[in-house]
Amino acid sequence: MSELLNLPTGKLQYGPYSPSRLEVATCGYAFHKQYIDPNRKKGKDRGSSLAADRGSVVHEVFERMNEQMMAGNYAFDQKVVRKWVSDAIQKYSSAYEDMEMIMECVRLYADRPVKNLPSDAQIEQKLALNSKLEECDYDSPDALIRGRADLLWFDEDLRAHILDYKTQPNIEEADTFQMGIYALVIARTFKVEEVYTTIYFARYGKYSKPHLWSKEDLARIEQILLARIETVENRVSFDPTPHNGCQYCPFRAECPVMKDNFEVNAETGLVSVIDKNVFNPHGDIYRATKLAGILIQLDELMTLGKDNLREFIKKYEQPVVSGNKAFMYKPSEEIHWDSVNKHHRMDIFRILEKHNVDGRNYSCFSNKSLTPVFLHEENKEEMLKELNEVLIRKAKTTFNCYKI
Ligand code: SF4
Image 1 (cartoon, rainbow, N blue to C red):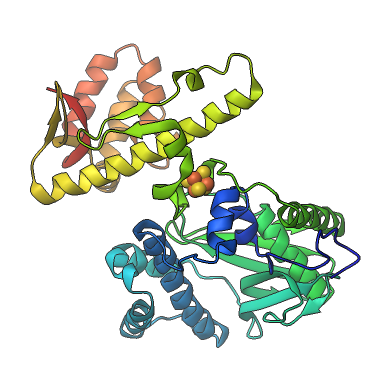
Image 2: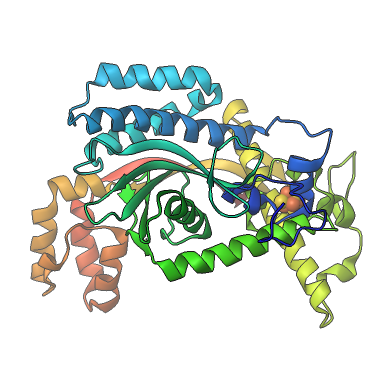
């Protein structure tokens, strides 16, 4: 296919690549299942389809909002926005379950939109490079790497700015490999030397710090990209490789790592380890890596099991007991800091002042901000008593495994 790449068959077998395809390639088994297996199913498990549909709905609604902002109108009509949400959910139906979160993402974006979005910004740009890393059509059979920019614009110095929306819970910097790929594709397509990437975390309404990709950075990303593609194309083993991404893997249930290492008693459901030696690496790096993989798998399964148990207990409204422990929801109380900050700030200032603590250092009070005060306060008993009188509490229920 190309002089740039070392390809075993001379042509690309598993492309076109994208940051997510390269991410899946971390595990040979998942990659094979998703992109090579002739019997592969397009279906996703419930968890991944809910997350994907939620992301698609948020992206689609933000797209509509951006179109309106590009026309200079930043005032959103709630009725219109609701229609955009409902139209998007018709297409990505499992997102219905997450309506509350979607509406919150939309509210936050309307509150904190991209400032001064130019009228010629580009929305949902689908771009691709061929094996010579030159621009080509997104659907071209020659496409080697493809990327999508949620929002793209150029400033007066011809620097490109990419904004990528994420609905995931974890916050990251805008200098990831995925962002580097987008920057590379944009730089090559539009022949610009500097690209800024920013991530917008929709569920928190937060923008990351913009990251500048220089010409040298892009040259480095290019080499990493080519090395990754060559590694995947030359792959001979499609063994499972547990890693942090296992939590999003749609093949978790059938993953051989579990089958190789654990036995599940069909009657009791108890899991036993087939080879106990696996839990002691005996100074062997291969065993240590295997053990790390198993522990990640177990961790994932624990999370999955707890989620399922939580749903069961919610539905049937009863604890599930095993031995002297029970999984259940327990009522408890927590301080309603929003309310405290709204209605009792002056009372807290007064109490702190009485105990020689300068309350003006606190923009808002919380468990975290007040803990150091308690640690250093000599009369903490008395201060706590006084604070307790003004700290409003609210009821909550906590799910956990409790001793009974
Ligand atoms: S669960 Fe992890 S190890 Fe198993 S197939 Fe999926 S990504 Fe690979």
